[in-house]
Amino acid sequence: MCSPLSWAVDVYFAIPHDFSPNANQAANSLKSQTEKKLLKGIESISSKAAASMSGDSNLLIAIGPEALSEVLSGSGNSPVIAVLVSKRSFESIITEAKPTKRSISAIYSDPDPAKQVALAKAIFGLQAKGVLVQSPASEHYLQDFIAAADAYHVNLKIVDLNKINSTENFIELTRSNRILFLIKDPHLFDAVPLEKVLLSSYDINRQGTIGYSRGIVKNGGAATTYSSLADIAESIYQQSRNVDSNKSLAAPDFTQSFQVSLNKYVLRSLDIIGLDEDAAHQKVRALMKERARP
Image (cartoon, rainbow, N blue to C red):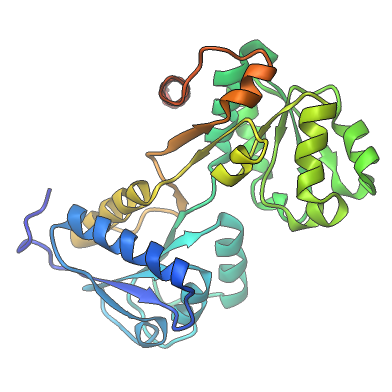
């Protein structure tokens, strides 16, 4: 690890002025954990001020989608990494802003489809037959899910949201699948409220939902992978090392390190017994390692 005096790059957390108290708390915690990784202090500045900063010796960490949009609206050209932002939000902002004068990357905060599929395989094994609803929201993740399903030999059915017009319709179209892969999809939830998606999937279709957050797992989902603030801090550290070594920013991506959350009561009702979060995490890592081999 670099010593405090060896860094040629100054790191700034760019934060929007209208952050909520909870968002500020998360940003401060992430800042503290990142400082421990870097062994140096990080200055917090407004995303408006960060928008005009220039020079490769300044690395901007845009905290959330609003900060990223504001940073990209300015005249500066310092490299920027977006964090606490979903892949969907990041790609939408980049498409709208069309930036050309600065290096941009992202550390996605939502679950990695590849890890979600690997988790399903780790839990359900040969019974890992899943379904995913295709909508404008899922388009950002669809190819990731398809590629991972192919790599991990998971049978994946894609259901078009246009065919779903009621809860009953949703149940019928997603029946006969052991797993429901669920992303944060407002288009789906407009057609079928989230609580009905979870209730019908578990109580009627007897599915395990691989959800998009620990909250989903707590409220009836079977499992999810997720990135902790420590995982995000580690990714910021690795990106900072690249910039400090005059290397290009890595492509936008999910964190390499991750955590697993399981609902043991749901899994038990689905006849999955004796699997804890540590064991599931190890299985996912083993599957990912096997996939990465040439």
